[in-house]
Length: 543
View 1 (cartoon, rainbow, N blue to C red):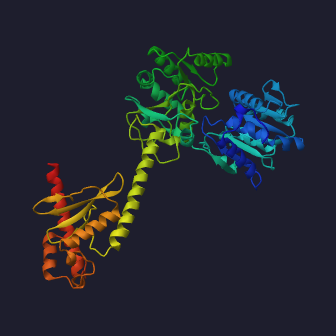
View 2: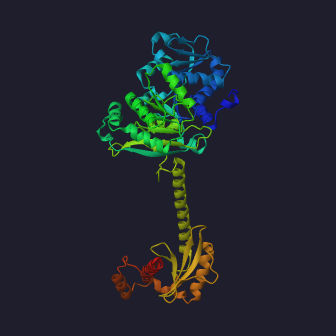
View 3: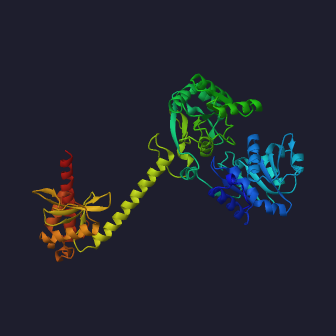
């Protein structure tokens, strides 16, 4: 890869994404996608991708085209490419700007390229990059991509934080997703903040009455339900309680709800302002500048900050646009996860009704792993670590159990196991030796039970490794005169079960499989008796 300014050299995962695209283009598919979480630096990735492909493009007299759908995305892309590769000439094509004639890289808006004469004027494209490529199933994108050769072999790369779109069709555009990265991986590797969530229940919010359209809650009805319930005041109070010192963004379904939320926050002593898509450009720029300066603490927006919003100091995201889409939820919540000096973690406030028939996305949908949150104070990483530790303990226990089974069953001594998993030797009809596992280091205490003294340990009472504990216990069993009962090879064990044994089992309700031998029934009796003894002993100790 050509030399890049130190600040913009790709991170390991960014380099892997670039390599995945380059390798993928060597195969049969040319329309390839990369899915990177919000905050992963996709503009850095495709800027370095352009730099990497520049020699091949120059040799063939070709250049790169970056397609985006919003002004902020265009500006970010152009600025990042210039920073990564200052030697490249970058031109912007949108509305009145038409800087493509001498450009090595053209950053263009999809709205402008949708005009036939504007796209016809641009030639020699050898690499296509689509920012926020989950929009690419729209007719305008399809027309533009086809014009520039995406269906004729031109290498085409799509970048998005979520490869989901409610109106479908993406499989017709992107042939393969060659690289994906989970938000949790970014958190664990230190590239994003850890995150925790809190539910904000709005008592009067009836989400059950909101209809679903294209797989998600319908914006207009959802906004009306939020405003009718007085959600603004409830959410503002929750923010004041849990995030009073945090700059944050509130995601709402409608402009009216964004405005009412901003008013409620300001009334609660939290300086807030609303931004929306059709807001005059100068007004929106001024509001964003005030947010950056700290004059505005909270930005309420009608879904305009889900893409291209770069404010890493944001540490709280309020999901006042409940959604069934995990992808949309990740886009909203991800705006609070970027690293920033002095930022401890990110807080997500999920606005919910008192009850709902809808399955709404939540903090666990930020990762593809199965996560169960044990409490609202627990962060996502803590929940995953707890689950991993639990699974590791289960695996460790499984290994211990396998080791135990191999050793105990391989012994010539008659080791049996109680209903609670305690291994023991029946020395006589009333004396038992048994082992108690020390879970801290997988060693075992040796114990004896008899009717007179109950449970006692040896004079030198210290836990031993399993093999040593077994050997000591087996020697004691033989020394106590239990050779006949302790041996698996005793001849009596292969005789038919006696009438007395079977009668005892019937009385004690011990199930005896048909054809059991005297030794097998004796084992069933011993397990029943010693299990009962230990259970009674434990109950007395607890009392």
